[in-house]
Image: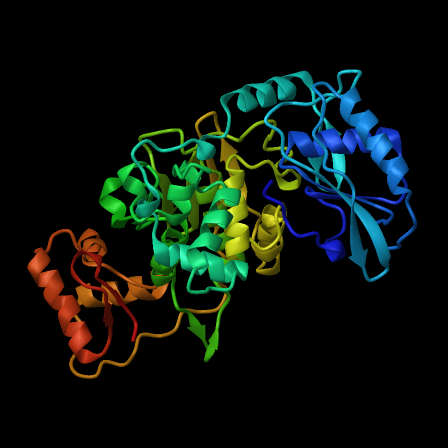
Length: 453
């Protein structure tokens, strides 16, 4: 079971429920709700305020056994275990994520929704049953892949983040952790999750596992407006880092009256959207990678695969249900996910703090798209730098104005602005502006772009 730390200060949520007294009805609802979702923990003897009170372990064990057998099919519930808190000892009961759908004796099916339990309707129950019947693709083994296809540097970094002390014989620790994490099986077969988290070259077995980044001039995805296109691939963590650097390089560096302006997109919201895309996409679907498209007014991040299980757009902000729980667990312990089940809430809060509208979600059976709209910039754009020597021609002025509005320019974008001029002449314009100190060249070859110094 991929358990998460119990964070009492956060109170009840999608993975944690606090119950001062063992109420049988509430306990049955909550246990089935956790099992039908991503699993979680029930704390007995405390409420959300942290107040502790005594609970009889023998009575609680007897009650849990009766509830587990009364559910259909019977639930798997771990025995109560003591947990020491600042207010006193309480009892913690772990409920694993189940491969089946569990109902109460009267047929009701519950899932967690924030800090409460939500009753599913008939259509939602059928969707959850259909989803569970296919199993978790990330847990399947990859024919031909071996542990030697995993990257030792990524494994070592993960172990360090997990707090595992590296010794001369650290391999034994790594193997044990990777088996418990579901990256490899006990007979040392590599899983889909193992390749995605630690693979040297995941694309060899999962050719659709990368991200296609595109930046457009304007607000529509017209081919003539495509300024930059780049494919990013690799294991999930280095892929996220590369993608973040690529997007950050395309962001404008606005300075107003000597002070930095508001960011176009809050870092927390954008990172959360990117992590959700790679963590929750349907890797069973082949053909299309994740798509990240940057326009002048928004960023669109599209992940292949519809919303999993019982999740709907209406309940998305308050629901946690992972399509890839092993990936989510790995990214959490790697430090890329802060608090499980709170990502969309934090995304909304960071956008609100930046005075931007909340994220816009769109979903079908085969994709989920999140749109983040760029912050409106009320301060005036900085003036053009004074010419060091000689005047600018009209083309160069257009290029500098574009850089001030969008943060950078590529030769492809410059050619879209000045279609009637030869590419060699436009490249000469950019080279001359770099020589004069008006622009700064970043990158090399096909990935070159130009920014203000």
